[in-house]
Image 1 (spheres, helix red, strand yellow):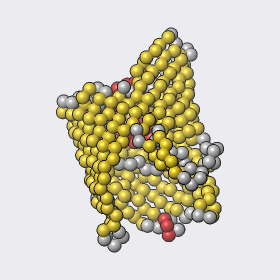
Image 2 (cartoon, one colour):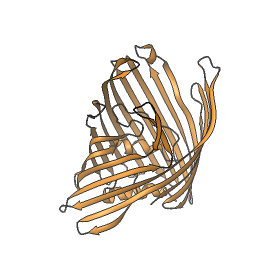
Image 3 (tube, rainbow, N blue to C red):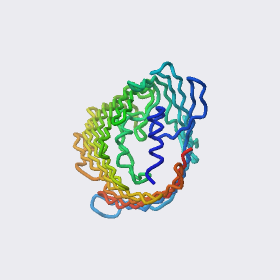
Image 4 (tube, helix red, strand yellow):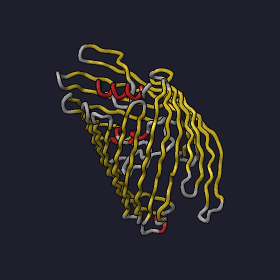
Length: 366
């Protein structure tokens, strides 16, 4: 069995403009109007054994532990056909987590709240010929390049922060104007994040990506991100400034032959902050391979994350170092087209660290 869940999600995206990575089903249609519902149930049990080393090579921090991650996603997609070519559409998705998180209140007290996430909320106008334009909360458009090496199973590797993204870890942004077009062999996306007028006055970014599918099984993806974070903030009885800009360049390849799938992604970035003297560059890459055996998918992925800090301030002058030098081994059993069980074992032997992590999980798409 191939990666059926992924293929279903992409097929939905091409057929109905439901966002990729989303599984949705039509539950209502009345002439020109239709409504789609979808979602995901996800549970993950994780463990780690980490050892950090000091600069002189002596033992530093170490720790072992286990934790769980359980959540449910619900999404709603609606559309109304305006004429033979145009339709109005909207999409909403939220993730509900089982665990809570601790936050500080205005009275310097702490309390626990639900760790939920609003993933998407946008409205748009779509043409079957020219693509779709939307406004609202959208994902960074590198969605079609970044996952080209995420073919093993749930990745343990964390994504890089994007300067200028309101949610730099998860790459979701409010106030986003996005354009996407899907063709038989080519898709293209571009998005501009308008400056946030609430608490990050000058936080903005632009990103674009495209992917081409050849006739012999090779997909080629390219991506670019520009971001800016310019603001003043108060901390430690003083006013501090940020004037940070970033450029990211991405290249992805994926090749399918028989029961094999091979994937690779590499990215480069330059980050400069004229207010703090920060001058940083990094180069990341991942290569992966999977093999399908009946309902099983087994594979491995190797990743490196290398950073160079050459800023004028001593805080940002650490030189070259490796944050990740890791390999993942993973196996997934596809119980049905919408239900899978998976496991991952990961080893990281980067500078000043020696880590081992494992994941066991269940995922069900509605």
